[in-house]
Length: 286
Image 1 (cartoon, helix red, strand yellow):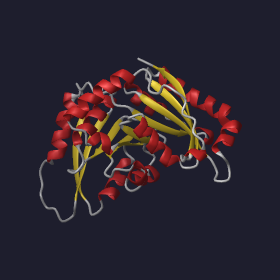
Image 2 (cartoon, one colour):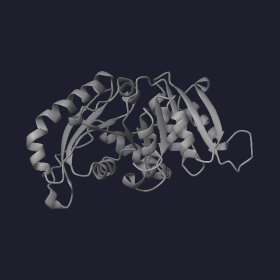
Image 3 (cartoon, helix red, strand yellow):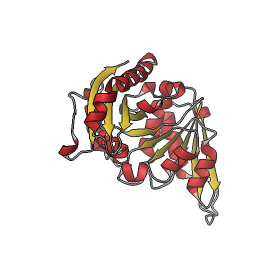
Image 4 (cartoon, rainbow, N blue to C red):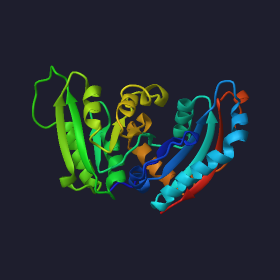
């Protein structure tokens, strides 16, 4: 199995009553998680002012969520931010803390199956390894899914699905838990939406450099908005790593596995950043 420890960013709108489903908490217990509690601040309100008013309540909600991850045996760090631009903040923190993937949160009553839509222009290796890390200690089935355009008439196995299946087996996933499905559809995004609802988690690869422009744009946001399924998006930066970068990352994540962030990150609007971010260095787990 891979030595690479994948790190996942989980943003939660703590003051809006948003939570993380128990099934998703248990599934992510096998990878380090950065739990990002956030509150979107109205344009006319300074982030610092919102912090003074709501920080205590927001921190309580965030700590309760962190406790759930700890109870499931996971390793979790927390960060609380008050921001006017949540998506920009998610992107900055994902880059800053070297998170491999980010969760677009939706309710997940059951997480007994994972959908992996794959296509040829996305690095399947890193996606499959991440899914292997997440699913190895669960009994979830994994559907490898590929959509052919209507004009393509070829039949038979799809190479990218065969490759993904092989990597998952190497990561400890039993072959009997893996199925391959190929559909023909004029719109791959629509085809994914159609099948996403029957799975507990969808894992997709980012196809443009910007999380803000792409992860929260089509097709990922469409998946999140049109289904009740959480969507885990693997960042392009991770997908494009070469071998030497992967080896360096193993060392970096090993060094920071027990303490993701070392100091407070309070920034005011005048500094050029829109968020007023605070690090809470909660970091526990197995």
